[in-house]
Amino acid sequence: MSTSTPASTETATFANGCFWGTEYIFRKYFGDKGLIHAEVGYIGGNHKFANPSYEQVCTGKTGHAEASLLAFDPSRVSYAELVEFFYRTHDPTQANGQGPDIGTQYRSALFPHTPEQEQTAKRVTEAVQAQHFDPKGTRIVTTIEPRPVSDLYVLFLLTQSFKAEPYHQAYLSNNPSGYHCPTHRLWW
Image 1: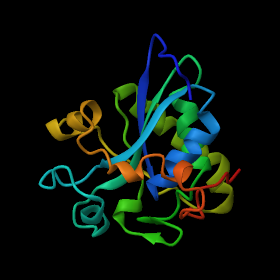
Image 2: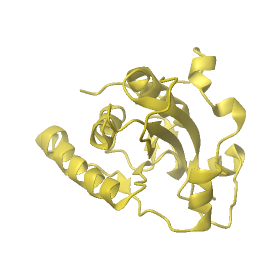
Image 3: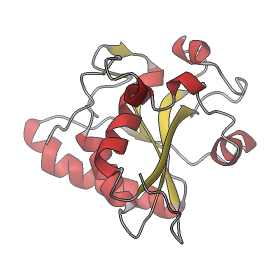
């Protein structure tokens, strides 16, 4: 990944199954193409579960999704490219799970950070649906979750209070033989 900070940096949050694989595949393909930083955490859950642990999220009771938060240089890679890649690297037709990983914490969801990102996410989703899934007769079930305005979401973005435990960060880079979700691959 880049060692210098660009003049402008944007963030993107993607949930598509086990966050280890999501973070890893974005690092692998965009590490030298505009990705500045990637980390994993929990998002989109019940505000009553502030700063949930991995064990709490895995119960399915918090409503959080395992997600990857990416910082990227928009002069090198666009949000639209990242959204399209998100769809290429998992099965967005599987509700509440990916492969053998079942539960709402493994749902396929986009968490736009701005109204512009939300519009881009909708546009790219429609294009990917038409090109890759309509011909197969299948539907994308990915949710584009509204940008929460709660203080908790702002804390996730700014202070990373929902950042996953340290052993989850760059997990597959640090543990190459660790669990790989079978859906985290290039589908087209």
